[in-house]
Amino acid sequence: MLLSFLQTAVLSVIAIGVGLLAAHAIGLGAPYVEAGLASTGSKQAIVKMLLPAVGLGVLGGYLLLLLDLFFLSYWPPELVDSVQRTTLWENFLASFYGGLNEEIFMRLFGFSVLAWLLSRVWHTPAGLPTDAVLWTANVIVAVLFALGHLPATKNLLGSIPPPMLIRALLLNTPIGLICGWLFWTYGIEAAVLTHFSADIVYHVGGTIVLRSKLRANR
Image (cartoon, rainbow, N blue to C red; front, side, top):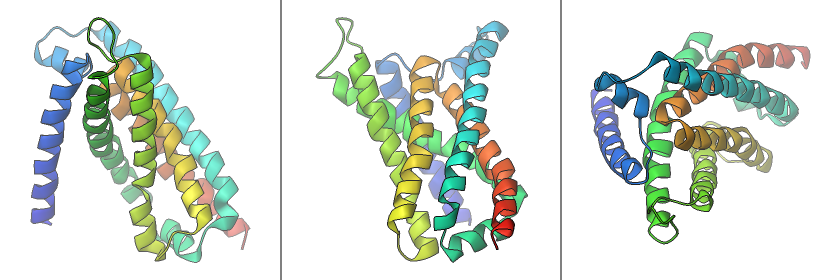
């Protein structure tokens, strides 16, 4: 466990460092944390960011739940058993991992580096990435983010049935797109809050609803 923690910590430091360098080069970054460290932040700016970040996160989590209710009849027994065994407390703690770690690696690092690379070819007169570059990077990273959930599914099920592949793409790509847009519009803080809010709604509140539906379908 200690080695795993140290490995994650080292990778996170590298991702944050490289991600911030790439983000700053294209006008992105962590503006609220940086402003706070420089004692130049304002409550008005934070509130202006909080409302869309949390609001879109809650809405996204609710939409995830509705989508997963559609896939419920396709759930393999192993997935059903996993959802019924996992405690709400574990799901709550996992939301912190998703909100923080996944956004650091996917948006701050992945999105920034990819957008920076693409902006070497396509950029505005000021040298910043065009909207097309930002959206291209956003879509690519969002799809990779969705596909990144498949190894855990394969470990649980032993294989990835087509409905589970479609489920992973439909449940995770939209949230990835929203977080990417918020990242370049407000900063990585907004993406983290949106991801965390969506996970709380889906993994905590949604688990209660899904368990109830599973019991009713027996």
